[in-house]
Length: 303
Length: 229
Ligand SMILES: Nc1ncnc2c1ncn2[C@@H]1O[C@H](COP(=O)(O)OP(=O)(O)O)[C@@H](O)[C@H]1O
Ligand SMILES: [Mg+2]
Image (cartoon, rainbow over all chains, first blue to last red):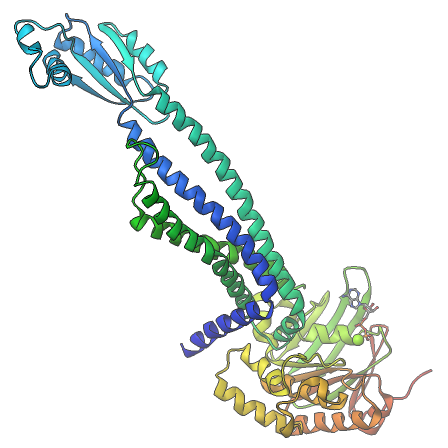
């Protein structure tokens, strides 16, 4: 057991001194990590908030379909299942014509001044209606048309198409960002592995001695892996700071919403802490992957 | 403790470095391996320390079939063997003490054990007062002593020295020889020493293996070397 701790202690000590000894090189790879993680952070803030907006908007995007006056309960059941069969339909809610009338009165004559309720006391002209919630990737126009074809439907309409189009546009921005972030991560991994290769090259005599005296591959490899991880952590310090303070600042500056009340931002706490954790994990992973493979390549026994 | 049975080695490029070598070395022996450049001396050493695998035959060291050893088992096996090279291979930025300790640190020995053993081997090689010196501050002979101290720090059963006196003048070579004899005597280490130095071989007579063009042409138990040329 104490051998285990001595071993771990040595990995960290050697890894730490590796960073110190090749500080310039470590800093140059760490800055590649910094740039990558900063972009990842911006991407994540954008992405998570976009998800939040999308969910917010999804509630407001609906197709409504009014029914002919002469529909009976059998027709209603038939129409409901026909609607549910259309691709992209998530959920349907039925409202009776009286409920529709109540809603109408609520909307236009809540205080009763216009006397709408009295005017239509005996008979109101409202239709019963289905309200159709759609899935996030659904085509509103198509659903409205298909619903319109069903026997017994009087009229269909839909709203919120502008918002949906905007979401689609933002979604493509997100895909572009994802590709950029992927490419940058690959670059950062490449730079770290290069640094580690140079470190290994600078220390190949040490490695040869370690081998000659019978150090195991793990014993040779892990100090370098720790070195890579430390570079990754070093590179994540600035992005973590920028993320925490930047998001809190922006959130306060914008009053918690983006442009309109319709788009509330994700509250800073604990969101920034999640982001920070993701960034540190990403930095560590980049360092680990970059160093692990470059060492493995150099440590393979040639025989 | 060490046996080669019908061992041949052909490198990937087609060079036949060893042909059907048979030999047996007992625990505690001191053996020279001599022969001209390219005769297969280093190849023989690489077969023994597990760096190369024989093309044919069996290399048995301490009951282990070295050629069949799995990659992952090679490091552990290597701890049985200390190696010393012609060019010392010391770390310039570490002191003498640190250089020797390094060999034990990478095997994760406790620092108390390391300090004790390093002092012991520094005394054995006669460098008690040089612990804080850097390699560049030492003579060639002293540097080779550090390398020897490092090679025996982990108490290997076998010490292999590939031309350890190749870079030293005759006086210093003699001292290194006496040191190796002392290690052979005091630590009981089996020693295989590759050398070109016929003067040394004739002066400090020991069992001598002669390689020529990959063939083991002589195994002189009483020692001494006489060129056929
Ligand atoms: N790794 C290798 N690959 C191919 N040929 C090699 C290799 N190592 C040694 N040789 C060849 O094997 C022969 C024996 O070499 P070596 O064992 O180094 O001899 P010595 O140490 O006696 O000078 C030489 O012809 C050499 O060129
Ligand atoms: Mg040689």
